[in-house]
Amino acid sequence: MTSTGTIDTTRLGRTDLVVSRLCFGTSALADMPQAYGYAAGADRAAATFRAIFDGPTNFLDTARIYGDGLAEERIGAALRERGGLSAGFVLSTKLDRDGATGRFDAAVARRSIEASLEALGLDRVDVLHLHDPEYVEPLDQVTAPGGSIDELFRMKEEGLCDAVGLAAGKVSTMLPMLRDWDFDVVLTHNRFTLLNRNADALIDFAVERGMAVLNAAPYGSGILAKPSRAGGRFAYQEAPDAVIERTMSMDAICARHGVPLGAAALQFSMRDPRITSTVCGVTRPERVAETIAWATLPIPDAVWDELAEVGFDATDPQGFAD
Image (cartoon, rainbow, N blue to C red; front, side):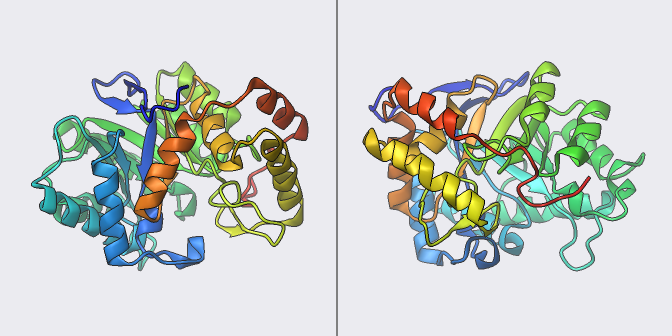
């Protein structure tokens, strides 16, 4: 990698979409303090979207559930300000369960895309995922014939999106779906980082099936971006002591080489040839520029060798039991 601020692009799996290998995520721009410990105001979110749309990446990820639609509404406002989505810019959103009832059948999925398109001010999106099925009970609302996965594929046939994906966390929930449906894309989060490799086998399987892989939350939802012995957020929870200690060991290695740990955490994902694009959340416009700098910073091979010696965990970082 170079430090010119240029981000490479690649084809999104088997589709005709071309995406930057860095994608910006929007959940933290939707005022979700329960997940991140803070909220982003409307003005700061608007400035951040301007920085993203004016920057060297062409890929933005959101979801209907982020802030109960607030992320999509803020993106829609930014698009109206710019006169629409620029040619070649790829937008991804997600079908979500009903926030009040928890249901996620075909009818809920249809209402989800309708609400998304209204909020975004668009008549279609580039990539449409089914989101977080591990929280749905019973799961056959999603997987049974005529369920929300079938509805997702029907939306693709209707031209509401170019590509369909599965975006979730729990690997044991995702793998059967990847075996049974021919998704174009799979998105995993918090499970392929310097600290955790829970999704390693899932990534291998998806690549073997020709699916594009999006790896989200390369900082483990915060701790690898801002390491501190006082703690931090890991997989949307307070980091346990073992994670803090491992993080501080990694931070010390990076400090000896003059490399921010956040840059190593981001590039750990971006340098893996299996990963099509790495989805990284930002909360202010300055973080957009910092993320680009981290993504393009030269990192000595010795750093990777020393980080590998620290080790990692392979259990589910959110504590899901099989």
